[in-house]
Image (cartoon, rainbow, N blue to C red; front, top):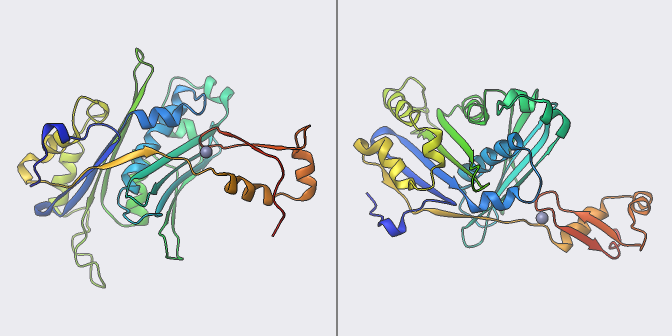
Length: 310
Ligand SMILES: [Zn+2]
């Protein structure tokens, strides 16, 4: 059991991984505060869209924090015919192992305004799909899984994803809260998964939803409340102990999360190179320059002259 002093306890903008050997379970908690508000501040999001994006960012941090190698990346993309047309979040592992997250959503403001006060996935997204992509540095194979965007919320859609696509029993809890007084958002999440033993070429012995240890762990994990996930005065260590104190959880060092956009002049030049000459003529500003806006961080890029096609 790791000893973490109160001063070291991670509360905000951190992922805290844990494992419970006796239950064949591993999990992670995440809580986002300033990083989340920083990402949301790039655009004027109506509350239901901010809520969905906040939960998606918490999920991205949970999924991305499994990756260790610098340059590895997880991307979540949801496309739908509903009021939220597109939602993209990603997590990039820096060379120092820190997680950089970013994200944005495209939405129909009139359709969102016409909705009753709701955070239900089916009302925000209608019909659509959720794609999860993992890129590992140095490996050419990109992993991608796609599932229909179904369920009451993103937590349920994620559980469906892991169960349908990965045959991996999973509990996923995501939550987001807006503080009316401060105007600030917080988000939190928990992902608990059954560790499948004997996976290497063998039968996945315990990867069964009916396995008693899993049923027990699932029942405990399911008791976590949205208010606990988002409460910034509760440490993530406390949350692990609240759920699993009888089962000797092993707690690993926390992983820091920061906001990080990857837009650079070179990348923007790369985007410009994808347009034809005629399209570029149409896009030109009166002074002959090109103005492009980064959808993630809202930064305006002024490019005097596109580089030649290579
Ligand atoms: Zn950017």
